[in-house]
Image 1 (cartoon, protein in one colour):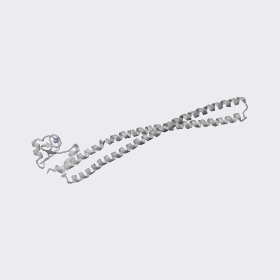
Image 2 (tube, rainbow, N blue to C red):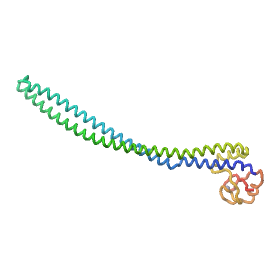
Image 3 (cartoon, rainbow, N blue to C red):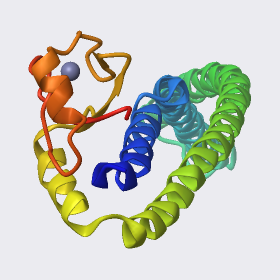
Image 4 (cartoon, helix red, strand yellow):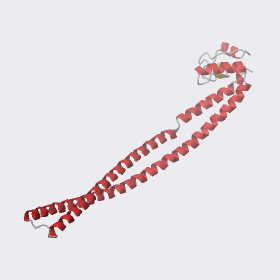
Length: 237
Ligand SMILES: [Zn+2]
């Protein structure tokens, strides 16, 4: 038995772990989550924009209502003076009447303005409600995707963990020199350091091995590399 036979299952674990790691990095749910996150962000911004517009309309409506109220109060004061018999100077009376007319106009305009902005605010309120509903649906979709991702990636991570535990056991039982050499070579070569010879062919690159290399590979205690891919060969006999 070749010393590298004890390292072979470790390489299988390493290759499997690498594939699993790649599966995590290229998981299709990651792309879908990113898209979903972008849509949620967009919906949030859209709602915020509408919230601000609603607030503006409400504020403008309140200001117009206030202006109408102030005009009404001023009107009542002038009416009291006009019709209370306190003023008799014709010039002053004319001036007060003129003021009253202006205030009347101001009040009416302010009332119209308030109605206008209240109508807009009502419209905005409806839009804000719809935007809120759309946002909630998108957030729920994102949360579901996130949960799905956790389940799926969780299973992969669990397998990686159990492979790591198994690797520790195998490493403890492996030929120390062969394992050390394997670890050294692995730093430079990620797609497998060892290859089994199967029917005179390198199991790593599928190229036929020369009789000389085959003979070396079959000599116990000798380590020989595939002439094509450079992997360390483990003989079939
Ligand atoms: Zn090869």
